Image (tube, rainbow, N blue to C red; front, top):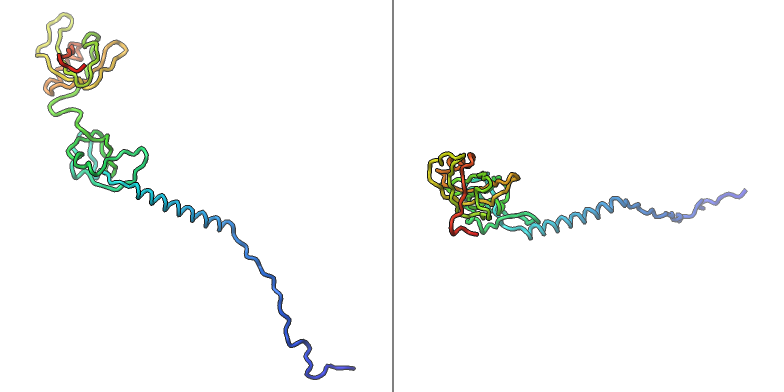
Length: 218
């Protein structure tokens, strides 16, 4: 029987090369889309931040609450940088000297931006009072009385009695009269503070007549 010769290898000295099949990596589309979305959002946020910084303006802010009819002082205000937005009314920092010493027309809340409509001249000057009087038909001129019209407030008798004591009082129309369904009208007027109570009582008792003064605006 034939045998293997000594020294004869059972296999070839050279190993056969291994064949491998390349494995294609699976890509997670969700992760890819999430990354793209994050990049887009980051770019959008940066663009918005740049736009806000570019549109920022120096405006006046309220540092402590100022209530209606109080004077505004330097300590009540500060200058801040604020991005403008549609519909947001602000006051430029360059006008801060115009605001100090003016009157708060509304309550100014600490931490808020100052509105140009929230300050100005006091609606009632010192030494005068503003009151609304209801006047029956025939107790005031039939022509309009624009605000600022000077009038004479005359006390008249009621039911044939004696006229009330006291001289007539000069006043000024504060707002346009409002007509009521019964034909009467409500008129806001300003009068000397010392005469406000008497005029109010006369109006309540239907003993007041409003006379337009010569030279009043038409």
